[in-house]
Image 1 (cartoon, one colour):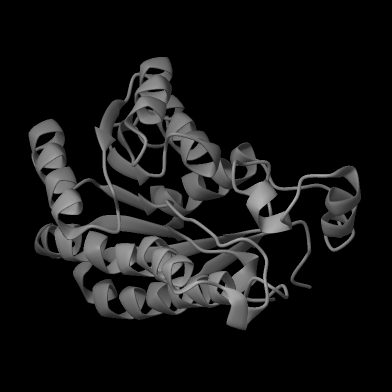
Image 2 (tube, helix red, strand yellow):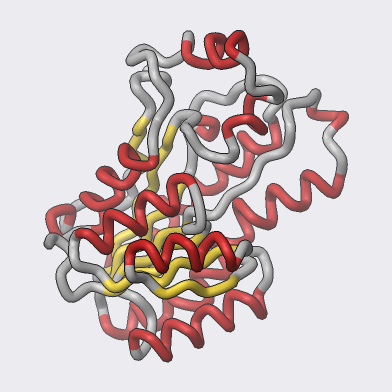
Length: 247
């Protein structure tokens, strides 16, 4: 019960890493809002674990403001823990061939959302002088893969934003960290690879020294540490959970 008495919001919690993190947080005693653009997915996971489902488009300011109101209703204000997990990618392609619409979507969901969530919750965290923010970045922001240029760039933004937020919020007792997962067993895996075939999986796995994809449980365990009081001296870190890919 390492999060006993804590409140948390996890975005993109209807599937993949977000669902794994929300599930683990509840197991450890937290009250969790599961925010997702797919309300049915969020409601299914929330029903399973005893969380609160909220429909939210993290790339839209009005939708994030509504999420803040839901947190106020459920928790009395901003959560103790905020996990910015929601993310998307474009399909693999040469950088000049990615459509403007795909570029805008990737930057809106992966980058602009960090700003919108900070605008909604950082002020209250500062005022009460406590809080933990976790941004889910990617090994793509450290060691880019070809043909995923704008996704790589969006995750580089997340890593730099995490460090900038950490420096600015540290005097107010608010910690900000990031996780850099390698490709994982989530709904985005097929999009990263372009096609989900045994050959393509083998190609991706060959770049991971430990020889397997990351799982929601892997990310949940790391998220639990960084968001718990055990990591009270840890801020501005972008921790790789990548089986050695970035070595």
